[in-house]
Image 1 (cartoon, rainbow, N blue to C red):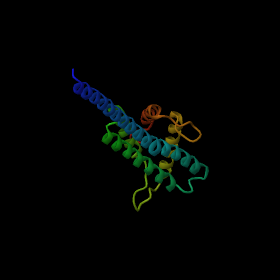
Image 2 (image 1 turned 135 degrees about the horizontal axis):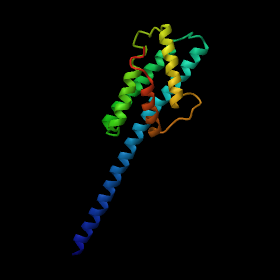
Image 3 (image 1 turned 90 degrees about the vertical axis):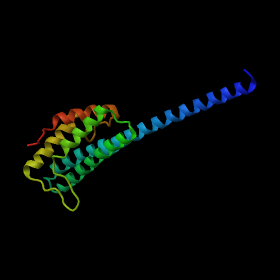
Image 4 (image 1 turned 180 degrees about the vertical axis):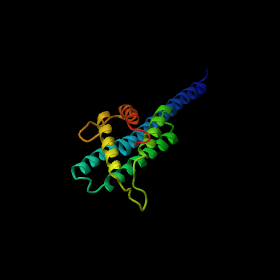
Length: 168
């Protein structure tokens, strides 16, 4: 090979290595973003929901709308996680199914809607108390260590199995 061809091959190899590194970095970044959305918008909000239900139990359900508002935050986070994961292509089919089932099961509970707070009956309060117990049984709640994405998905799948459909 002459000198020009050798130089061209070296430049091509260097450029290919750079492009492969760039693609790998982008994939790692997208996975990180998807994981952060799931953990901060879903897991953290479920922990807050656990805490709020416990607080309402201790306070004889003095402000039940706090629970319905937080449930709405959990549902919004689930929806965001599902759509973000789909758009980025980082959510596996099984994880998507788990999150969709969890969204469906949690949607059964009274929740805050625009210009309307969910009214809670005694049965609704009992259902929320059962939800809190289920959250704690699977390892999601106040004073329980937060999980990485894989551990959280295992807990979410267990939670789906513990929430009756329909809840009555």
